[in-house]
Amino acid sequence: MARRVKALVAITTVLSAVSFGVVIGAIPASATSLSTYVATTGTNTANTCTSPSRPCLTISYALTQTPTGGTVSVAAGTYAEQVTITKNVTIIGAGSTKTTIEPSAVPLSDSDSDGGFPLSYIVDVAPGVKSANLFDLGVNGSAASGQFSSCAVDYVGVYYHDASGVLSNDLVTDIELPEALFGCQAGLGIYVTTDVGSATPSNVAMQSVTVNNYDKNGITCDDVGTVCSISASTVTGIGATPLIAQNGVQAWGSSISLVGSSITENIYTNPNYPSYYTDSTGVLILNAGSVSVLNDVVSENNGDIDAQEVAGYGLLAPEGQWVFEGNQITNSVEGSIPFGYGVGDGIDIDSTPGNVVVGSNVVTGNPEFGIGLFGASQTSVSSNELSNNGYGIYVGGPGSANAYYGVASALNSSKNSITANTSDKNIVGIYVDTEASANSLLLNTALSNMRTDVVDATTGRGTAGTSDTWLLTTCSTSTPNGICPFFLHLSLPLAPVNILQVLLNQLGTLIH
Image 1: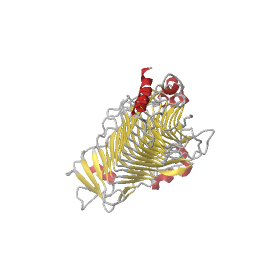
Image 2: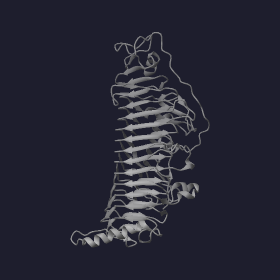
Image 3: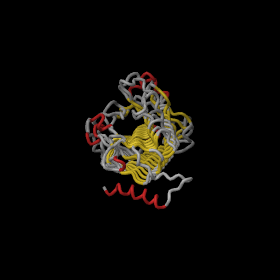
């Protein structure tokens, strides 16, 4: 099976290690309160902004009057400004659709920790800030979009650069370049990064955040040391488009927790196939540290979840466990790409050496693979429910590490544990390809699949002449024969002695 090229924000080597000291804004002598106030009817002239009856006109000016650890309360209205945060502070709006930061131009920029072009931002949290919190705010990039005329500058809605804090009940929208520049691979809703060697690695919690109408990625968490915790949030791409391969949430080299969130509508229509093609992904995990993707709805993306460990991409984090559990993974979009090219998959685990858990997910309506293992080893796939997919579970390769970087060890999917899954009403229930070996498949149920229930294309000394161990598989059809003798017709139950013989025959596989 061929593997497609992944669409990243940037696959560029970090150019240099830059260490920033802590940047703390000075507390003005006139500040007498921890709170300042902002309204569209306010004034910045000779104003300390400490009274709600005499607010500042702009958030930026209020920040100069707010002491470290203080709060800026922003009334409903639209604020046409870039906001740079250089101290620990909390900014609270009147609601994400009521208080909106929407500059008409974004001349200020920050550097990108992964190299590349400067980042023009709407809200920037500068290096060294340890607690910058944004509550009940809207961040809208539409008014400034027209200023971009080339790919020389990227565009970001909210940027945490070597900085930490909390986003809660915020809306980040319309972070897009003009359509003619979508190929620039810019336009990030929320971007969280850490410079190499930083004393203040970014750690950002996002709660009930909505991100939509972005250009490249909705939420991007990159770099070793970065930690993102995302919960109860909604990330929605622009839907089917030939302009750009979007990703809903990307974690590259970072650690991430994504819980109870919805990631949808990242669909690229692949205009360059077959000479070259890529795809959009709902959740893209690349060379990450610790990963928890739990109880999310990921739907209607070219690939719903794609998790890869490929040294050639760079930014490899210290290995942590990757867990994908309790998710609803549905209706990925294959588009014009033929079956077998890795587009239209539910969950893909690619080139990983181990310590990956895929459990208790409901995976339905994906035209290619419900769960695919590509050059993956020692992955646990258990208690998943798979239906109405192309192949319910696919085990094979080569993984991306092998396909694009010539790593021979990434060729086979081996020593994976596939246990107690239910795979029905797919084209094929469980398919083990030739690029696989020494996998253990225990107590799986594969019934009522259209073509066949179980296929194992490997050869060896395992079950029924395969290289794998199949034990207590409930199915009615298999290639080769002999994988699923444990299928028991309720109308013609086997005698106890025959049931015992079935068990002994399958258990005998483990002895060899």
